[in-house]
Amino acid sequence: MIEFNHVFKSYTANQPILEDISFKVNAGEFVFVAGPSGAGKSTLLKLVAGLEACTQGTIEVNGQRLDQISARAKPYLRRAVGVILQDTHLLYDRTAIENVMLPLAVIAQPRSIAMSRARAALQKVGLADKERTNPLALSGGEQQRLAIARAIVNRPALLIADEPTANLDRDTARRVMTVFRDFNQVGVTTLVATHDETLMQEFAHRVLIIERGQFQDFPVRRQAQL
Ligand code: ADP
Image (cartoon, rainbow, N blue to C red; front, side, top):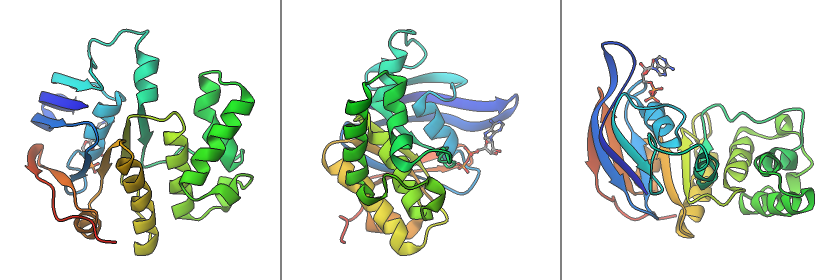
């Protein structure tokens, strides 16, 4: 599903952020990306999402080399990957359901179909009763779940989230992480950046750790016990 081969990334000359990173994530895996602040977790996720290009090496996502992808294939790849960035980019002049419908409007889905798929997505993240609510009136955890609903409404094969539980209290963080686990259990490959050691223990999966541009890959930890 994801394959990095000797990937280097720098934003400015002589300042490598990631150095010689190689790893594979198989379809259906749940992987945490960990490491101290500034280590390059967001950068790694942006490379996977195709929002940044690597400086050297090759990246393959969903069977496509990102540097070789044709303009025609790009929208398909975008739909195959659901992305939740640190800034959720919710639109505060629209209701919750309208936010979730946006990715479907972009691909010109008829409104009635978009509405029913957005409703199903809201239901999956436990926000069925909030569809007419403005995101500003939602709590932090609810806003994260709304961002997840928007990311999964196109039924992506891969879900990427950057620190989705930052600024959330423990119970809310667990609830958000449970939503990711539920999607993973129905086959969605999931990559989550976090520095929350407790959540990593609890939701126990493979952990990729980045430190000073370098990389360690830990196998699956103990099974989640909720
Ligand atoms: P993390 O997510 O682990 O906190 P980031 O990937 O956000 O780490 O950042 C890694 C390093 O790259 C930091 O030193 C950061 O300042 C730098 N960086 C991130 N994005 C950019 C950018 N667009 N331009 C220049 N430097 C950047």
